[in-house]
Image (tube, rainbow, N blue to C red):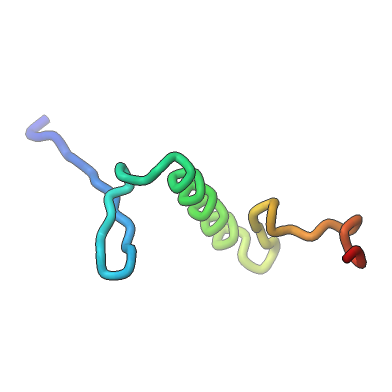
Length: 65
């Protein structure tokens, strides 16, 4: 092999690029969930919609205040 390939990931925070290595564990988990949700929604577009569990309203909760 000729050389080593190095890959780095960055997120845009306003005008600043932030390396994903600098994210806290909670931020990494949120990013992973967002990526998975986005991927699944694009993969199943028109057939299903995926969202985070805490955002869902279950039938047992409907009508409760």
